[in-house]
Amino acid sequence: MKTLTTSAQVDASGRVHRRQVLGGFAGSLAGGMTGSLAGALVAAPVWAQDAFPNRPIRVIAPQPPGGGFDFVARTLADKLGQSFKSGVVVENRTGSGTLVGTDIAAKAPADGYTVLTGSVSNLVLNVGLFKNLSYDPLKDFDPIGLAVSYSYTLLARKDLPFATLGELVAYAKAHPGRLSYASAGNGSGQHVLAAALWHLAGVQITHVPYRGAQPAYADVLGGRVDVFFDLSSTARVHVESGSLRALAVSGSTRLPMHPTVPTLRETGAAALELESWFGFFAPARTPAPELARWRAEFARVAQSPDVMERFEKAGGRPMAVMGEDARALLRRDLERWVPLMRAAGLQPE
Image (cartoon, rainbow, N blue to C red):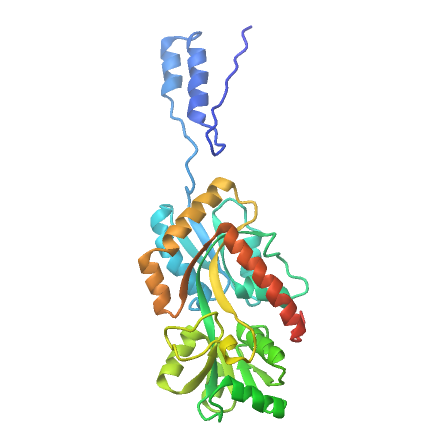
C-alpha cells in the first residue's frame, strides 16, 4: 500500500500554512479518486490562521477611571485601536492600590492580547513597599514602550513664611518635627518622594497621610498642613491661581508650565529626581512576532503629534523609550529607588 506523506510550509514567524498542507493532501489523493471527489476536496473551504490580532486586545489599567493610569491607557488605546483593527479595550482592574491589576496582567496568557499600563508606582515603588510582591517587574514583563512622564511639584501653603525650599530645610533642621507634609496615603508616590527628600536633606518633617489627593489638598489649602508633593499636572491650577506656592519640581528639568520653579537638584536641598513615567508592558515570554508588532505600533502612536499634544496639555512630558531601552530605565529606577526607600525608613509591609 502506498504511503502518503505531506509537508507543511512555515513562514518567518513560524506559522504553518494550512491551506498549502491541505491543498497538497487533496492533490495527492486526486490521482486515486474520481474527478468529482478530488474536485470537492480541493474546493472545500479552508480556514488559514489569521494574522495577529484577530480578536480584541485588552489594556489593563490598575486604578479606577479618571486617574493617571486610566488617562494614559485610554489616550494610547484610542489611537492603537486604529492600527489593531480587532479593537483595543481598556479594563480598570482595581484593588490594593495597583497590586491586583498588575498581578492579573503578570499572570495573563503571553499571547499579545493582554498588556499592562505600567508606571513607577506599580513597577518600581511597590517593590520597595511590599515584602512578598506577587510579581517581579523585570522577570514577569516584557516592556513595549514608555510614552509620557509626569513631574511632581512641591507645594506650600501660601502663608508659609519661606520663599524657597532651602529656607524651609534650614527651618526644619532647627525645629525637628515642627513642619508637616501631606500625602495621598502611605506608600503613594507623594509619600515616597517626600520621605526620600527629607531623608537626603537630613530633616524631620511630620507625615500626615490622607485617603487620596483631594482631602490632602483641602488641608493644605486650609493651612492645616504645610507642604504637599503632587503631580505637576494636578498642582498646576493651584500654582497659577496663587492659592498654593511652588517650591520645586522633581524632574530632571524645569517645566514649561512654571519655568521659574527650580528642580530639586537646583535648590541644593538634595540630589534627587523622580518622574512618574507611564507605558505598556506585555506578560513575559510574549512571542517575538507579536511583541515586535506591539513595539512598532506603540512607537508610531507615542510619537504621533495628536497624542503628544494631548499629553503636553495634561502637563506631561512626551517620551518614546522603546523595548530594551525601557527595560534599562526600569532597572535603573529599581536600583536607585528601592535602596533609597529603605534608607528613608519606608519599611515594606
